[in-house]
Image (cartoon, rainbow, N blue to C red):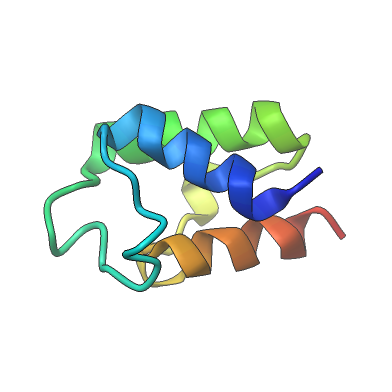
Length: 78
């Protein structure tokens, strides 16, 4: 499974914007992700990749760009 393509597809569905050319854009600072969208993002990623990403352990700094989200998903997949 291509993690990068999957993460970008999930992000696109949630924020309605293609992030492929903005991989290091801060999603929170730009207003593209808020707390509700973050929960939706984590649930979508858990379902798609079979990972556990509890909101209680969510650290915004680790998930604030598309590149960081891809790296985090890959690390959680083992």
